[in-house]
Image (cartoon, rainbow over all chains, first blue to last red; front, top):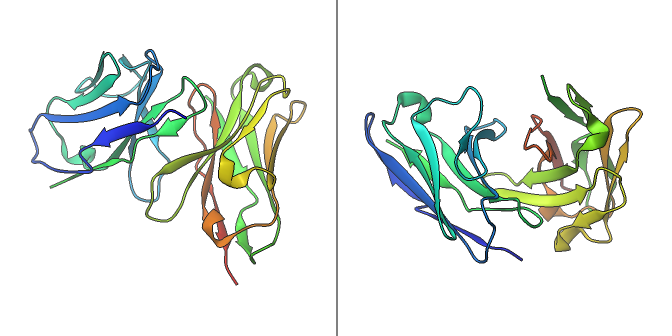
Length: 105
Length: 113
């Protein structure tokens, strides 16, 4: 099975900060990687798919990139609405998720 | 607009049965694979089951093999998950997710005596 290692598990940041979250796949997944934002009591919201394609309606401060088996979600300037938990997901073979990163003040 | 609406969750005793449903609209349901993903209280996301667009391929995470069964009804644009012999550790919000990564709002399953 493909394992996704996401880091950090918690991230303390301030409004306006540049934030980076990383996921590493245990084996090759090509660019079959998605990023989600989840707030308490809500379903995950798709932010990015195919590693770097921004979902329609998602602010451009969110971006995704890939370097081999390492994937990065970047928030260029953190906004108050961005405090949430973020998950990566590989969908190359079966589906597996990273452990999540809680972005807090 | 793609919509996925889950139903069928509730409180059930260990060893019990539940059948979850997901009503789809806004896309050509029969053309896409579908999945169930769950999230235990305070925990991360866990993929549970997959069904191909044809219905010929069905996959399950190890912990539910032999207990859960996924199916679709293309005429009703619906996805189902039959859950037998439920365990306390199956307690979670269950989400219906399309192969295009559209998610429903989830339905809560609580297994407790």
